[in-house]
Amino acid sequence: AQSVAQPEDQVNVAEGNPLTVKCTYSVSGNPYLFWYVQYPNRGLQFLLKYITGDNLVKGSYGFEAEFNKSQTSFHLKKPSALVSDSALYFCAVRVQPGGGNKLTFGTGTQLKVEL
Amino acid sequence: GAGVSQSPSNKVTEKGKDVELRCDPISGHTALYWYRQSLGQGLEFLIYFQGNSAPDKSGLPSDRFSAERTGGSVSTLTIQRTQQEDSAVYLCASTDRFSSGATSNEQFFGPGTRLTVL
Image (tube, rainbow over all chains, first blue to last red):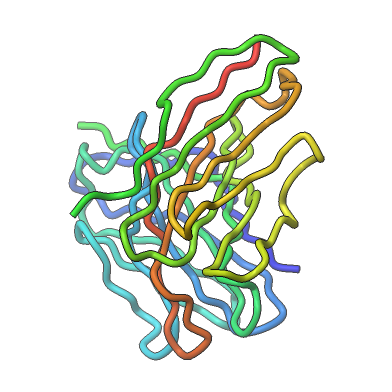
């Protein structure tokens, strides 16, 4: 079985400061890892994914994430937060091979960026 | 091009009634997924359609839930005899051809249908 943990329900950060949203995973195979963002009353928007190769993945809106196999983590980061980054962030995992491309999501982390 | 669309955007129903939720995937996408987003519980996988293959129904919470995908495009999620615990946002996603190789395609999500069962 595969699972994803987002240990923080909420992360608060001041605008201009770096942000980190944590994600750890558990799979019995090679993980494909994803980050999605959800703005109020909107569907999920894809941010970035890790499939293979370089452990540092760059995505939309200046976000990046680092795959750490030994720590089974895939934390989302951004060097300088913006108020407009305030949203709900979901980490997700899919196992390859198999898994049928269905994603297992974490419970989400609410990011609040304040002036 | 158009993204994934869902209708209705909001649905309020009485306990015991049946409801149908509709999803229009991105044109040409062969895979379609339904998820449920409950408050504080993240997203829960419900069902997955891939082309003409038998759907993966492993996430459906009870036999009151069913889904169809007609003509390989539009999908309808039906909940019979709704219960208050069915209240949630139901999200649909689609992706293009499933790859069993080294790549994995991201899923594109619709805006969801917020279901409230009174």
